[in-house]
Amino acid sequence: MTITKTLENDKVVLAVEGWLDTKSSPELGKEIGALSEVKELVLDFDRLEYIASSGLREVLAAYKKMQAAGGTFCVVNVGSEVMEVFKLAGFDKKLDVRGK
Image 1: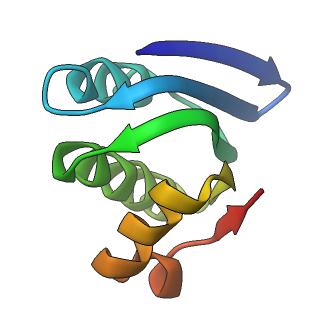
Image 2: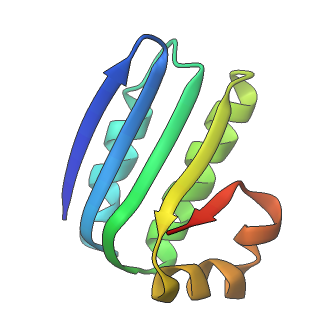
């Protein structure tokens, strides 16, 4: 998995590529945990091929962190296979999840 971080004022975009699984999800958790004074967090899943339950936990943690900070959070460019996992978990109803 590769994470590319882009900063624009108080907006952060984390582009995640590859597999977000048990082995790689702690890396995303560290990136999110290190963020401070961010008003908008965007997870760009354009090149994400697979997400496991551990990855879903990190997405939910990011959402909760932004809610607590009074910021906004969204997941964009979600492919059909990853979107199916989001739907099964009910994340498409609770979070701002946008498909490709």
